[in-house]
Amino acid sequence: MTRPRCRARSDQDKEVRKTALLTAARELAEERGVREVTLTEVTARVGLHASALRRYFESREELLLELAEQGWADWRTGLTTLVEGRRMSAPEVADAVGRSLDALPLFCDLQTHVGLSLEGAVRLERARQYKTAATTAFDAMAAALAKTGAVDEEGARTVLTAAMSCAAYMFQLSRPSPTLRKLYDEEPRWAHSALRFREQLTTVVTAVALGVRRD
Image 1 (tube, one colour):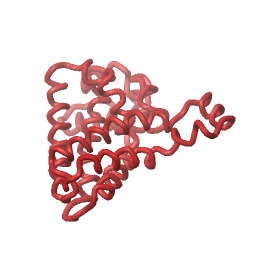
Image 2 (cartoon, one colour; image 1 turned 180 degrees about the horizontal axis):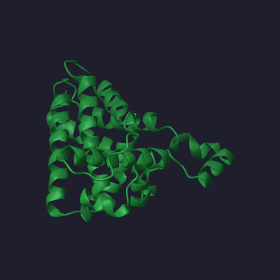
Image 3 (tube, helix red, strand yellow; image 1 turned 120 degrees about the vertical axis):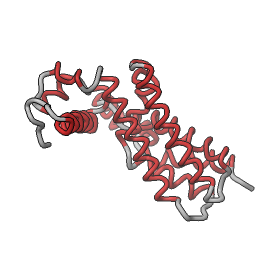
Image 4 (cartoon, rainbow, N blue to C red; image 1 turned 90 degrees about the vertical axis):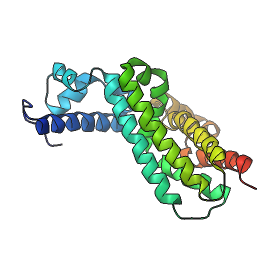
């Protein structure tokens, strides 16, 4: 990672520093999970004092919420690329949704925390900004899925809601603690479902897509 200048003087320097902080938070979250990210570690990785972060993000929650906001844009890009201009069946739509989320493990991890703590712990205007970005991405994906012919737009919204909810839960199961890994080694039948994130997610989303498909 390129370290920013010791002191951000210009707008460009400030943007570089903000990007560096987001990159550090992303790296730490990908290495150890969102719940383990601390402001002290983020600023240490960038080479700043912890107090310097407050000039860019008011809290750990705001920093992570920005990563989640970026994740919505990434999901929109990934999913629409997979389905754009194609006529698809309901199972094919479900497979595309599953693949698009499987490619974004950090986003799936963040979705667990967004509803539990992140969006409720920031200022009203920051929460509004996140909701606006998420809704814009969601609406664009629903419209893209409807154009495949497999589902109508209302059905597409149901598919995306189910996928997002299941991905948040199943992702946590697919990243077991050392204790659970040891347990799964001893009892493989319990690991059978927990460790198959994309396959399990796609199975559930397929069932939902078939249930709401356009006849």
